Length: 418
Length: 150
Image (cartoon, rainbow over all chains, first blue to last red; front, side, top):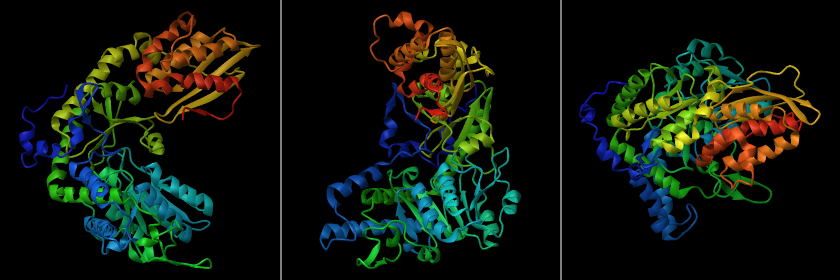
């Protein structure tokens, strides 16, 4: 059993986790009669009251369509919707708000880039380079594109620690490489990739880079201009916002040259049966009525995060990660998959002789929500020769006591099934 | 913990750690692969038919305790059974793990398979318990495509 410091929270008096937890109504829920311990934040995060209220407020007081009406409600909804775009622009430090496209989430953002930029710029014999730690959503769209175009998908290998092997990555950058698409933070390993180096290597060869930021945005501050990435994708629901809303950032120059994604209302400037003139950025990529309530929820989530401050919650989260890693590593027969030097608060592990699915079922009975399975990263499971892992993914509202509960739960698993 | 104890009965844990008939079969007359994408469990099932009787049945693959034990006990139970008896057992077993009202005489028919009664309290684990059975049906139907629980 891990040795547990007696007064854990006092070490972190600069971050009032009890106060933060009070902002998240769901955290008082009980599961199987036990207090909920939510360690499945990489799948989706919980929502603060402010986000829930923002969605409610839209439907109660603001509901109307955007960019359409001359009436007051529509005008107010449009203003709120566009104000969120500006919030996102600042959150990502994009140069202009028109570089922020609202989409359903990272999956749609990547599919958008694959079917517009990809279709236009990737041809027969060309290559798209990804890494060995990608989520299926940053593999399959490129596979589909490559299949359609007769291009090939290349995969940069990762080390046993779960770090991208930069030298191998660089070797795979060639004259045929038309795009690099890598994850900023791995959803399974927690690895924070050296994205500045990746981008510098690619840009030296004039290859644009897409970063999958689904897992990064909740943990690390993102500055798309400092990174100089060409595309960046986020999922709102992993960022304490509602499901069904996310954003694609793209450099204006690239977005302008790309063909539209879907056809429909809002993405046009004028339509005749002979010819349609497409709308300007960002609307060219936003066909149809958007997820307005979700967008306002995302805006509230960003306000909430700004108020909380990355500089305050990120160090706390890191201490939680270090504490959890040490506590779990002390459990006999437990092996952590993903031991990169730079890690976000995601811990995947396997227990000798015990299948993650059984581990998850027993932990669930203790009120502890973890993810078990391949985490939409089957090639990564193959790389580590495991069928599946158990994953505990942490957020700033988690506590040291919850980590202790997890450790206790794993001992129970071993007792019951070992 | 009582639901968990009912799910992970000793017999199930024993079979999951030391599965019976866990081997490939060179002279199998039927074989099929099963896959549960939810947890990554993969299973290969081998059957040797002697007319309409199952002369031998074995499996390979890795999975959770429930799916491994289910495959192991399936092989034990079905050896020597006719195809009609196997199909009837599948239905009875399926009713058991999905919590449907048992038909008359089912407990006698189930025999050792009754240890899976606890699964019905864990709906997400039904697929684990039935993976081997779906794979068996595919093998007997002569299916070439791997079966998936999805």
